[in-house]
Image: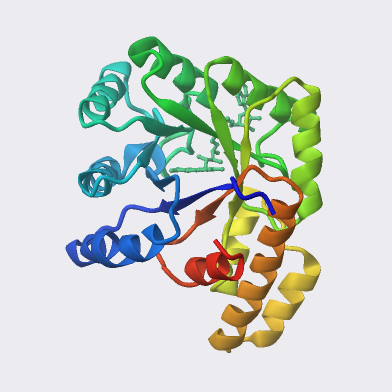
Length: 278
Ligand code: FAD
């Protein structure tokens, strides 16, 4: 297993004071024990969580942790995003996850989102080399992509615009990830593409989410999860087993690192990391 594999943890911005307090003062110290490279904090469609995202980012930054806010233009203008970049830079944040994002519901059909490669170029133009920029990658291909090839080409465009590394959408098909890395390498991408991993806790939510984002739950996994019905204990135990195996294979086969979509929960991410000896 690669000893130098980078581990990172993703949060979504808790909405309530109690949620924020728990995330910063309970969840974070527990996950920090693993020694992650950074924590990242998502950004709601169209900038809908701008203040909440910033609040969690500032809270983590105040603890001296490395934190990467996610960022997308949404429907904001250059002045708004430029000001946010300056604020993050002044606060000592030096990492970002740059995304196109999706339209918030009810935004209307005429709205055009700014593609992630354009955001990366904007960040480089405004702030030079200050930020380490992560972008999103899709081993099972983005749901709106014209084709497999075009999606990999657009990922290359994000690197050409100045991205430093990528984090994948979650997947359970390990072959899809390594095939994707090969296709990226064939196009000349030589930067790390970290595996995004979603622990399994709730089957109904995971199934709904996966349909929307184009991630496939292999049939044997969904059949097994369906069979557990409401038996949460069995779902958790099976999920930890399957995801530990997946991570083990990834690390043994040379994945540069793993980014956990923690869903703001310590368990089962912590258990999986312990199983991996991290
Ligand atoms: P892009 O890379 O811009 O690609 C979007 C689509 O357009 C793809 O189909 C691509 O093939 C195509 N495309 C790309 N560039 C061009 C171009 N220049 N011209 C024409 N077509 C192009 N969503 C959130 O709302 N908030 C978050 O915080 C968030 N965090 C995420 C973190 C990770 C690691 C990942 C994998 C996803 C995250 N998402 C988040 C989801 C993401 O916003 C959606 O998947 C979104 O639909 C695409 O964003 P993107 O940055 O990948 O877009």
